[in-house]
Amino acid sequence: MGQQQLLLIVIGVIIVGIAIVVGINLAATSAQSANRDAVIADLNNIGAFAQQYYRKPTALGGGGNSFTGFTIPPSLTKTGNGTYTATVGATVVTIVGTGNETGNDGSTKVRCTAVVTPDNIQVTVNN
Image (cartoon, rainbow, N blue to C red; front, top):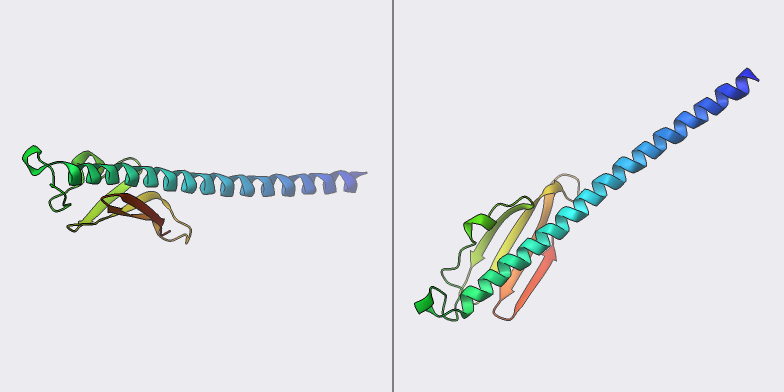
């Protein structure tokens, strides 16, 4: 009877250990996914600001049908979700968002890119 109880204890410890490892992996994956979604939302928000700048007349502080001169609002260059940088051209703005969580490759941060044109915001997940 003693051996059977010892075996049950060992099996119980193994099952609990496996459950803990699975739980940790699920939590990490969930945090990564949530950060990626938040970075994408921020990129769409910044892209909307860029399109607003494009459409606003120069007399009102806009670009007058050009992205030239657009900058990311200072309060959005670094948020709780990540950091953002923009490369501005006359007809397109490329915004790169780097999140706070580790990405799919396990070595770099979550990274997404938004290509903003006057009529479209296209977001691509890089990691």
